[in-house]
Amino acid sequence: MIALIAIQGTNFLIPLIIMPYLIPIIGFAKFGTIGWVQVIIIYFGVFADYSFNILATRNVALHKNNHQKLSEIFSRVLTIKLLLCLLSFILIGLLILVIPEFHQEKTTILLALTIIMGQVITPVWFFQGIEKMFWLTILTLVAKISSAIFIFIFIKELDEYVYFLCLLGIGNIIAGVIALNIVFFKYKLVWIKPSLMAFYAELREGWSTFISNLAITSIMLFNLLMLSFFEEDKDAVGYYSLAEKIVLAIWQILIVFSQAIYPRLCQLASESHFAVKKFYKQLFIPFCFFVLVICIVVFIKADFVVYIFSGASPQKAVDLLKIMTFVPFIVVLNIPFHQTLLAYDLKNAYSKVMIITFLFNITVGMLCISRFGGIGAAFTMVMTQIFQTSFLIFMLEYEHRSKRILFKIVE
Image (cartoon, rainbow, N blue to C red):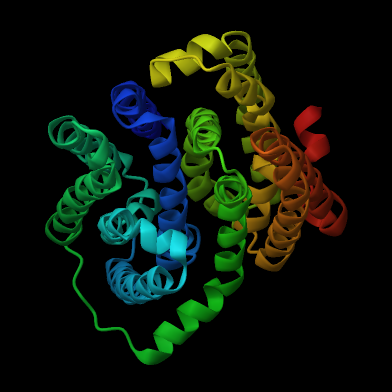
């Protein structure tokens, strides 16, 4: 947990340093452009990652004392990720040829492919599974600090905004190369050529989780993409992108919590459900209050928060941030429910929730964003997270009652 706090603390502080430097140079309009291009790259990053952030972490956690099995898992997962990465590059090239908006920003998009490559070769899932988070802490620091240095060196003028995402990706690639060396030289894993049947089995097992990950990404980020197509005022897209990034920075705290507890939760779920309930009871309620306090402080000081992230306090950005401020608290309420579904391998139930939530988000977003612009996008995010949290609670507590946890938590 401490290692992950250091990781996400870096993820929070580096943008805090970079964004006030970047936005005055490139302006809110180009900042909005970077935002929607980054969403496209994140989508293809999810495709290349498939479902390994969850399933591979779980498999490594269950076999972390079996060196031969770890080598098999690592070789199989990395090979599939590299193949999916290559396919992602081909698909992005086709989109640039077909979609005018993509063609207009082709340089920005193509340079940003370094992000996908860095993500693919950095085995976050392996270090999480063996619960050796020290290495992830070091790798994150290397990636973020390298990227920040590159940005300060190479981005000096408006037209150089096209290099921003590329520089982020180069930092990730550096960290990925170091990570692979650690895996092969420190942990002595050996490369075992995967079979075609192993590929098929891995892809088949992860399909429902992949669809869930795609839906989760859409729930978090698709609003910005929709807004970029509906909103003619590109500054307004930049305001929303800024407010959303601040909310997602707070969201990183939740990711810390989820990533830190998931490997241990998988082990406890294989032992007894009572142990799972006890584990949540000890950790979850204090963490909820902690997140709530952060949200309250950000709401009260929204104008100051926007200023420290951007070097300015446009009222539209402040208003958007206030609307979305409590989204992380809504999300934290669903962590025990979605983690329990995954720990017990109830992937179909989890996928059902995410897919239906995604459809809800698209429907509400199309109606609200087309009519109300950024304000509509902000309210869409809030309504979608309320819907998702409610649905997850229902799915675990009523559809899978043998795994219910709610009443034990509040006793």
